[in-house]
Length: 306
Length: 249
Image 1 (cartoon, rainbow over the protein chains, first blue to last red):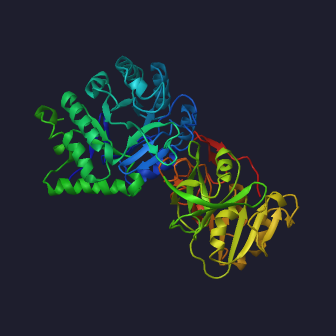
Image 2: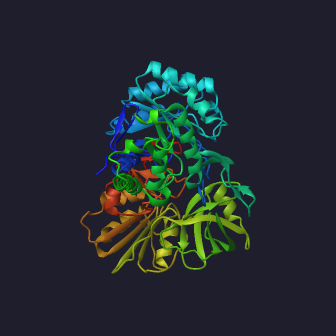
């Protein structure tokens, strides 16, 4: 049987299918359930400095090709988060997503995450629907660079930078983030939903983030471009609902994938289903390990011997 | 988002309304809809009848429910769903225990399966959807027995094969704390928590990793007994854990 274990920065995972931030990961009980259901690791909902209620409903809207959401970064705030996770048994397999409006916020959050016993953060530099944080920060290249280098200098955390696709040049953004240990590509696309009979917007915030099957080609393109240019570790995310989708991301350079919206279609069994599918593909195609297919379609042989 | 036309709205009491709407929903008793007031909020609501015409029965407690209660015959009524699981089909002798607006959800079952109905309310004025023979308690004694509906029910628990429960969390907690765990009655409980998405992805309604909206809303008593947070902690809109302020019906 082929090995599907992988490594992102210094983090070794038994399987490369990770619960994406924002879906079923607000409560510690649900994080545990995802891990028990076969996710190799899990990313929490994004945590900020203060408790935040998020937007009024409707916060989600299902469309044919995926999901629109504007939950609005609802989160209990870092101190309540730390409190809830005090005795949490899976800190090594849990990546804490954080968001802030300044370098200082990010550093404070990172330190508290580290103090709570976690060793990995995912920087939400890309939430498309909250002003002052997320992608408004993530589109400011100098600030991104400073956030990442400050966290790397002031903590021992592994830093994953989740980048926004809502920019002209995602490679420039990736280069500004190059001190991160890995890139997470991509967050949701900025989008709007319309209800034609009431002539009202589908989401209370009007603008939301688009996820699900429809955004997969956009995510693939981002992975392809960034891998070719940087060769760094990439976690692919965006529209993955089957093992075949995951393979596409690996071929273009991702070393792991995140799955979120697909829980809507197949629920928790999806993690094992995708993992088993990846294993089967490697076996039937004659590869002994996942690393053998990473980046083979991104055309830079030097980058493949990671 | 789906929509149907309103057939009519019946005022059940001072602040409870039943809205009948024309739909070909394929729903089962216990399921809920996410009701949308265009331009306003979306909220979960149990179906009080799943046969055509389908109905919802609700208390007006905020802007959305108030707006819905003012709809007129022929107006469009917007919703998503039906979502959630449904009550299992009972055999033998059946009891229903309702508190708050819980009778709305149980009413959909009562239209299909007869049983003894135990209803608890604050006062006489809060009662709705009553039929002859219902066993009533009120907090102030203005109708039926004074006291809690659980006190009224418990001495009879062993008379039933199936018991269906829908009401405030503290009422349910009162029941599962006190009922004989070896009772022959199979007890099924419809839970209610703050819900944002209704489709099992936002995690707002989760109790110990169990989603009320998708894994439920109906759980067996054994499943509820395993939820260590049940009746003790809830989560606010930010996902922060808060203690329940104790109260029971």
